[in-house]
Length: 146
Image 1 (cartoon, rainbow, N blue to C red):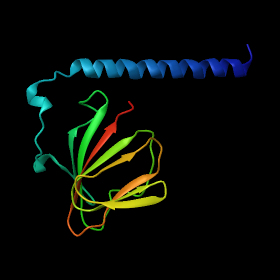
Image 2 (cartoon, helix red, strand yellow; image 1 turned 90 degrees about the horizontal axis):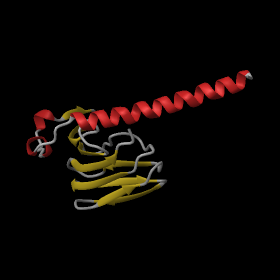
Image 3 (tube, rainbow, N blue to C red; image 1 turned 120 degrees about the vertical axis):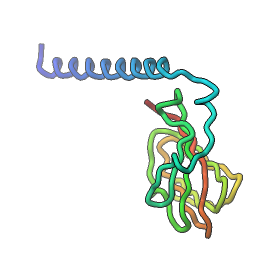
Image 4 (cartoon, rainbow, N blue to C red; image 1 turned 180 degrees about the vertical axis):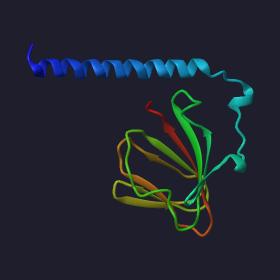
């Protein structure tokens, strides 16, 4: 057998093993979690929030608890943003609860306030900033691509 053929077979084998390991982990994780009314209802608790450099975030549901989706609340101080515009393979929804947000999507921006949602398709360059005078509070819903 040619060395390149051996390498191709080895790479193919590694890809298959990695995919199988991810599926096994996903099945094991979902089987290990016992869902109940007590852990499926999550009330915001500032003491359990994570401090960030621009405010804080609170995970209502993270990838270790849910099957596919995550739900996070972000609070961003006036004049700041969580990070520079970026992209990733997951789609995201943002829902503005309080404050004024500037949403950036593929080179264009829009400014909006409470009760507004923003959708970011997969791999689109996007970002969100607080352009108001009070804290910006918004929800982020994202599908986990384990």
